[in-house]
Image 1 (spheres, rainbow, N blue to C red):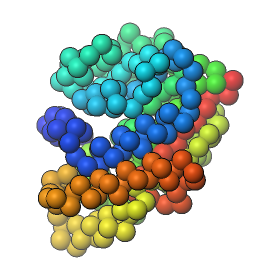
Image 2 (tube, rainbow, N blue to C red; image 1 turned 90 degrees about the vertical axis):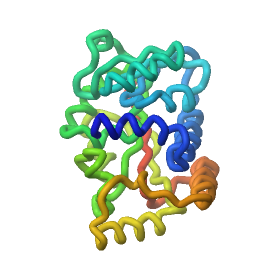
Image 3 (tube, helix red, strand yellow; image 1 turned 180 degrees about the vertical axis):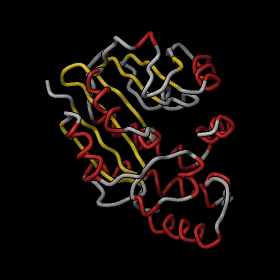
Length: 244
């Protein structure tokens, strides 16, 4: 992700319908995991810190890692949660010997060239029985301009991500696609972008008042996902556990 683009993410993370709805879905999934009191939780790729202050139960202890110094500084200024400058591959010195009860990467793993090695590293930083929470973009055939702008290396399927995690030593707890209800519309949009060779980011597109409808449709999935997993979608959520 370009540094200039990462700065624009601050406003996007706070106001854009996709980020707002995704936070509600991710919070629901994390809440359902019933993390114990005083669990040590690390989020990698915190951006401006919207997730840090929105997703997690009050009884956990949070720490963040963010690759862009400006974003890390901004996130630190928001409150008392410590955010260190570093990457998923190169942890800041202050955290290299730390272990956690949960590690979270939300739309981060696809930015890592060697994701298998990264997953093997994460399991060493988890306490026995600790959880890894991931969200990633789904289906390589949905590759689009947004993936290029964001410097993604790949998109995932359930089978592909599950194998990566199992090879690293994780036990899959829960895995589900999401952003399913808007899937047909997003597929059509990606097809249109290819035909017209559109430039720029998906987030450059403005749909006016209809964006509130997108938000409401997307956010309803948090209730559906409590009952059963989705068989397909634009994104994929997985929680995996380190054996006790």
